[in-house]
Image (cartoon, rainbow, N blue to C red; front, side, top):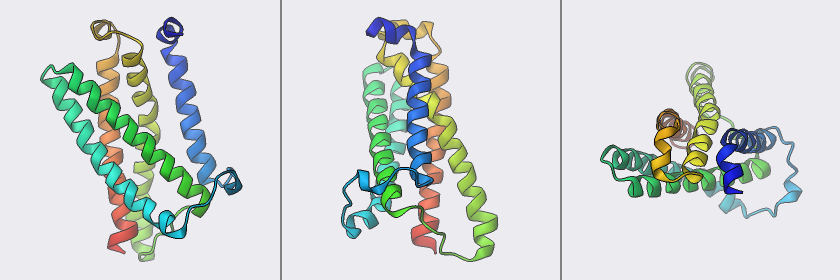
Length: 186
């Protein structure tokens, strides 16, 4: 399996990216029936956006700490922080999809002018970056998971990881902005 995975990182990246994005789009589009999952209490469902904001803030910190660790040559710390970042991303995604399946999307509660000229463009950029970062993150993760550290220098792990981390950070930061607009500003 490991040899196959090492030789097929692009295939793994494509499959994982398609599955993750299909789950999100399926949940947003209402394609995934809510009857597939037990429904949590209204209080739990209402807490998920706040939980996800905390997860996002933590992920921002772990991505930055992972970046700092590798810039200082500390590979083990880098790996630990980036694996933690990915686990946080998975937790975020799971909670986000679960809430979407049971509650749907959240309507913007502010003025129409702000909705049209601030919120929607901001949300669109956030969504675009979130979509684009997924294959970069998976590719960097699969390269690192299928090779010893010394072999990563012969791959595009650092370039793909850099692009993925930048897009990931901006997406998480913008996600916090969306959260603030939906739950605290209006």
